[in-house]
Length: 198
Picture 1 (cartoon, rainbow, N blue to C red):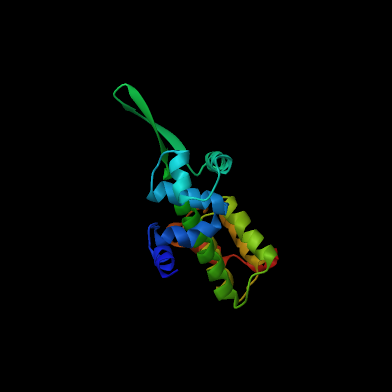
Picture 2: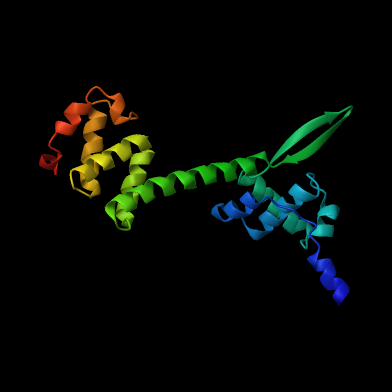
């Protein structure tokens, strides 16, 4: 019994902590993650007999999981010619790319939403989250959004309708994707009476 416990405590699989922190944000099943762990730690080839030594899945489950990883774009097959033979290797580059992109997007969203909540002194409503996401999806630069928020706060108004009207006017004037200090209309914008637009 003790020998079995000691065996179970051995650390034979290793995974980067950043992968663990971000894996939950990806649409990946437990079986898919276990197979990826195998590819990271043991072998980057689809060898069913060898995989079954480490993972308690049958042939069909392994093949279905493998196909699912391919279809979801987590892995890809790379061919390497070795003399007269062609070797098929499983590349995890796509998996790592997804983790990196997911981490950047999460950081970006957390940052902009946290700034609004800090300035407004309250939690944003789902509708307000949607509005900010709409700006980002419309390629409104984060710096422009932050500067519009600053303008609103300086005028003592803390609602997104007001911020939206500022962004709308700035994009009409061609100030999209620029900071206030970079625009020649800087003074005119501060002189504009935004309250009339509400």
